[in-house]
Image (cartoon, rainbow, N blue to C red; front, side, top):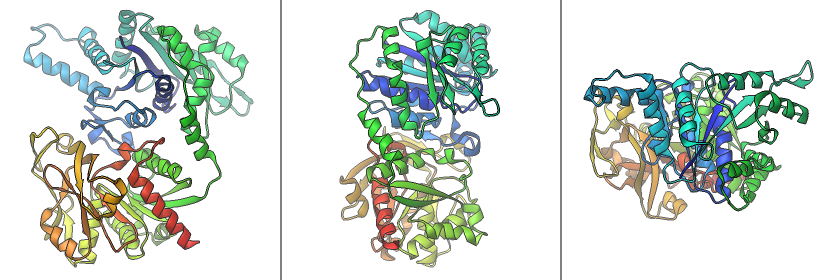
Length: 545
């Protein structure tokens, strides 16, 4: 029977519930347990797919094509043996949508539909379903205790704790213990009030994770314990760490995993965290640095490119270097020449994915520089589309564009594909009027790599599986013209022969892909494409030295 650990947060948002929950899961997995994780988001959007990155950060895509919260990226990076799916993230909007659809069908036999029991029952059903087949399921509740939006989730958790019993359910609560510099001490009162808020809705935490920018004294630990009715050993101190990948070891050192196993009556071997120690050591060691210029339009919010950031760090670990990311605002690059100097100072250039025309000219400026000056270049999703457009304009002399930006372009290098087959072999249809949230090629799909290409060499296999998230595709009519002019198509989709990747054979390292390799990168293994990219950056840095 699956055991459930519910994770809530108090005092303030952005405490790192997702990272902490993933760290706990990683330690439990290291003890041989089968662990999964689920994120419950209180907002009314059905999913984050149509939300601005400024609002929500990155949209993480699962293998089965769900557009999910970025915390699911942390879940997959911290867990070796569990992949997330559509079952591992749902919003209030999704819950209400399901309940309303049932009501419209008459499933409730004309009864009055209410938050309790109908909404809470649907939440409970999804929580239980998400944990099936696992020893432990970590269930993270988004938002902060006291938020109106999250009350139905909290009520569902309260009911589940009663229904499952103490041997199958426990509550872990993250709080902030602020350090007041003028007083020279940490304050426990916000934590006390946060737990009081929880208890007012019928929830008593079994574990407290106390976040702080400074170490917390044992006296304060005892104080927190006595005021919150949480045993002292279950008050876990979690000060800021040099890297998030140290957190599994920090929690393990305080025997949190022992406490969980004891609570659930689980007998499991001791955790081996040597791989996490190795990752942390690499990230905190004094190593040579390579610089990557990432040219995007959401650079003010690094969370918008969270998986790419982590993939670059992991590639640095694999190559024994530190990767410094210099963020360049693509829109500002179009008018500010000084920003081009940042690109020129980098050892490699990267154009991430995105939507919309804003900043595309700046991105293509960076692509032109990388192409003409033999600087290692990696384009992802929109980055590949712009690399193709840039090449068609500046090498073939075409008035090339994407129909996403100009529907009447004379040379539509990139266009909206109207029909394609998904991985199940089912025909999918879309047009310009289709809902944005349901019109993309999403999830894990196979790509066939062309022999004697750099990409085939990097992966070492003729067929790869990578995740996708895009509406527009490269127009196959221009493949011959591009290849005659020196750009090589290095990969095609297995089902429909859509272009998946391009490269320039005469360039030291110029690769662009339609898919999102960052979603399958891991700090403990990296990703072959990012590792090869950073190797090229190291070689470039050597030339500049």
